[in-house]
Image 1: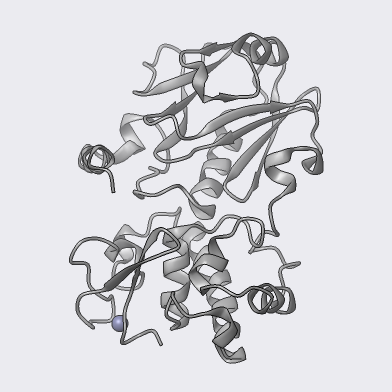
Image 2: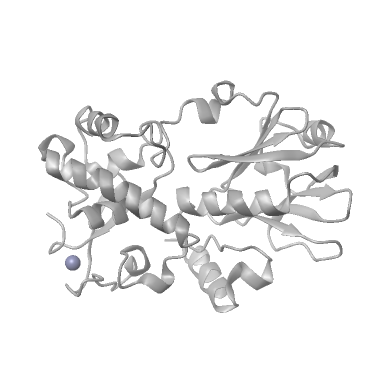
Length: 296
Ligand SMILES: [Zn+2]
């Protein structure tokens, strides 16, 4: 991982995390892209803080974060409107406006959305500010400009390019075992790569893929064609359990290092079940951590 991100991360963790500094209930403290649990917690935060308020104007401090919409056009489209609904699909947040359009946010790496009350200073790395009539604001921050904000003149997910290509939500009941099994057996690659393919199942990235394979006892580099049905069943159950539990824990697994792999996913990190140093290898360009005792 990039050293800048590393020190940024450590700095923020040490300084009482985002919680008090930026009034954000969850730090996107993982050193990778925020995944389903972090984005779901962020969605709830936006629901609590930013809905139903009239937008006074939009201030694009750095327009490079805007995707296929100009600062002027975004401002014109949102002025006088309210955000009425906050939905999540995969790693995206969709905010439905009062005239039934969609403001879309993706946080890339180290991005965030932070609500500030009247007179409160804007957070560091703020790229776009949505100013509300009452003086409060929603600040989109991104240190490395890897996320994006887009605007679509529709509320229909199938008409939004980023969303229409996404696979099903892993926590929805429509994602049953049969569908999951088909997804696994229908592709010939590693299980780690399958779980991260957003067009197959939405919202899982490098960290949660590692967690799911760890909890399921399956090595991440196993080829999907060689998995037993009982292993696929275990992956399915653990996918649901890991994501559900992470959301329940506000996507903060740091205090649960004895149960989860994610807090131990670091240099010299060890297996939570006491099997010594975790192994790691690059799979599909991403570093995966695993325990050769727990996983087969
Ligand atoms: Zn182990």
